[in-house]
Image (cartoon, rainbow, N blue to C red; front, side):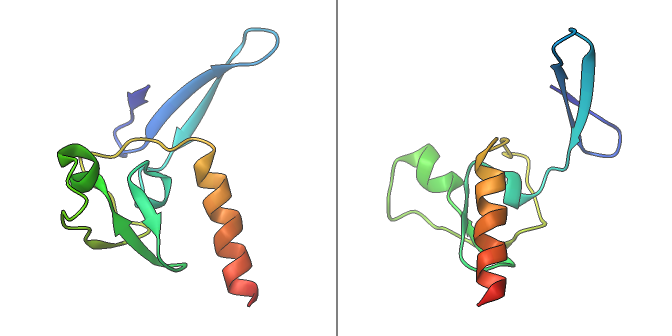
Length: 91
């Protein structure tokens, strides 16, 4: 993975003909491995809990569109989160 000047991570994957496909990934908390959803706009950052091993560590509330330097792409979980948020908005 590489980082573009705009702050987006660029993921390069290859299609069936081995041609590279460049996919920009926006670094937001919603796409982070350490983010846990509270509602459609906010959630908890679990980075301190996971790094320290202390379940009582601080879990600050963060906006879904913010990010930090400890960001790690959550992969497929992002799309699961989007579906969960869409379901919340229907109710």
